[in-house]
View 1 (cartoon, rainbow, N blue to C red):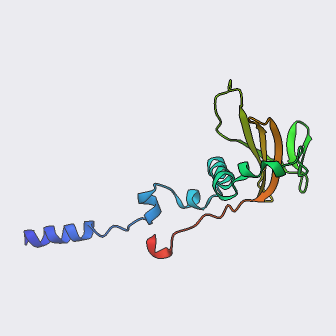
View 2: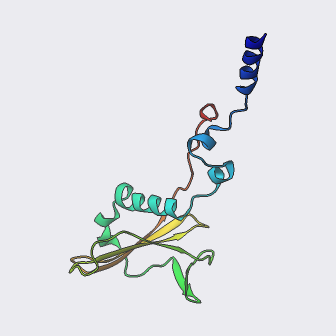
View 3: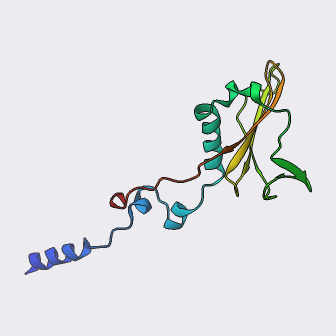
Length: 147
């Protein structure tokens, strides 16, 4: 009788509900998983878009000396279309005391989902604005069977 009781006890203990896959693999709650992308994710997407997909450093000759899609108000940079505050993302650069120092920034409007790219410096001492460029912030979700 005792082995049967032990077997019954083990069988009932093993039948605990299994949490969703994202909780035990990534240690993220459903709220965190469904939240909009944070600033690090947006910066990574912008840098990837500038460097890899659009290769904007090769198109600097087409840049303008000013940006038409934004303006300054009360010390903040704002989008011209909806007057929302723009998020500024600084690109990683070389040493600050370099002769041909390059400063790159992206000004992102979360409301419209577009960014403006600003390149300053380099060997030709350029000051070029490019954009607006649409940024897709959709997060690809795994299929229901993977959860």
